[in-house]
Length: 79
Image 1 (tube, rainbow, N blue to C red):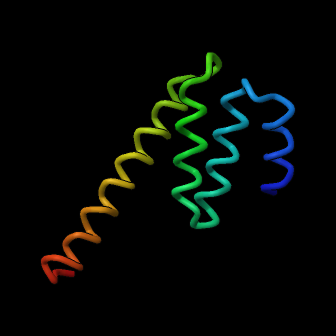
Image 2 (spheres, rainbow, N blue to C red):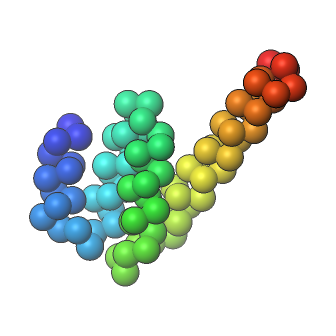
Protein backbone atom coordinates (compact mmCIF):
# COMPACT_ATOMS: atom_id res chain seq x y z
CA UNK A 1 0.00 0.00 0.00
CA UNK A 2 0.90 3.57 0.60
CA UNK A 3 3.55 2.84 3.25
CA UNK A 4 5.42 0.54 0.88
CA UNK A 5 5.29 3.13 -1.90
CA UNK A 6 6.49 5.90 0.40
CA UNK A 7 9.38 3.73 1.57
CA UNK A 8 10.35 2.87 -2.02
CA UNK A 9 10.10 6.54 -3.03
CA UNK A 10 12.42 7.51 -0.15
CA UNK A 11 14.94 4.86 -1.19
CA UNK A 12 14.88 5.98 -4.83
CA UNK A 13 13.85 9.66 -4.77
CA UNK A 14 14.83 10.21 -8.40
CA UNK A 15 12.43 7.61 -9.79
CA UNK A 16 9.37 9.37 -11.17
CA UNK A 17 7.54 6.06 -11.68
CA UNK A 18 7.52 5.47 -7.93
CA UNK A 19 6.20 8.96 -7.34
CA UNK A 20 3.48 8.35 -9.94
CA UNK A 21 2.46 5.13 -8.21
CA UNK A 22 2.31 6.92 -4.86
CA UNK A 23 0.23 9.73 -6.36
CA UNK A 24 -2.23 7.26 -7.89
CA UNK A 25 -2.53 5.52 -4.54
CA UNK A 26 -3.35 8.86 -2.92
CA UNK A 27 -5.96 9.63 -5.59
CA UNK A 28 -7.65 6.28 -4.91
CA UNK A 29 -7.78 7.32 -1.24
CA UNK A 30 -9.46 10.63 -2.23
CA UNK A 31 -6.35 12.59 -1.21
CA UNK A 32 -6.00 14.58 -4.41
CA UNK A 33 -4.18 17.64 -3.01
CA UNK A 34 -1.42 15.38 -1.68
CA UNK A 35 -1.29 13.50 -4.98
CA UNK A 36 -0.89 16.79 -6.83
CA UNK A 37 2.10 17.71 -4.65
CA UNK A 38 3.73 14.34 -5.31
CA UNK A 39 3.17 14.69 -9.07
CA UNK A 40 4.56 18.23 -9.04
CA UNK A 41 7.81 16.85 -7.60
CA UNK A 42 7.79 13.87 -9.98
CA UNK A 43 7.42 15.92 -13.14
CA UNK A 44 10.59 17.81 -12.30
CA UNK A 45 12.71 14.67 -12.03
CA UNK A 46 15.10 13.64 -14.81
CA UNK A 47 13.35 10.25 -14.96
CA UNK A 48 9.96 11.86 -15.65
CA UNK A 49 8.25 10.67 -18.81
CA UNK A 50 5.33 11.78 -20.90
CA UNK A 51 3.12 9.76 -18.57
CA UNK A 52 4.35 11.80 -15.60
CA UNK A 53 3.55 15.03 -17.42
CA UNK A 54 0.13 13.71 -18.44
CA UNK A 55 -0.80 12.67 -14.89
CA UNK A 56 0.34 16.03 -13.56
CA UNK A 57 -1.61 17.94 -16.22
CA UNK A 58 -4.78 15.93 -15.56
CA UNK A 59 -4.38 16.51 -11.82
CA UNK A 60 -3.92 20.24 -12.34
CA UNK A 61 -7.00 20.37 -14.58
CA UNK A 62 -9.03 18.42 -12.03
CA UNK A 63 -7.93 20.77 -9.25
CA UNK A 64 -8.93 23.76 -11.37
CA UNK A 65 -12.33 22.27 -12.14
CA UNK A 66 -12.90 21.51 -8.46
CA UNK A 67 -12.17 25.15 -7.63
CA UNK A 68 -14.56 26.30 -10.35
CA UNK A 69 -17.34 24.04 -9.07
CA UNK A 70 -16.75 25.23 -5.51
CA UNK A 71 -16.96 28.85 -6.68
CA UNK A 72 -20.19 28.15 -8.53
CA UNK A 73 -21.75 26.51 -5.49
CA UNK A 74 -20.68 29.06 -2.90
CA UNK A 75 -20.69 32.35 -4.77
CA UNK A 76 -23.21 31.80 -7.56
CA UNK A 77 -25.46 29.37 -5.71
CA UNK A 78 -25.43 26.90 -8.61
CA UNK A 79 -25.21 23.13 -8.49
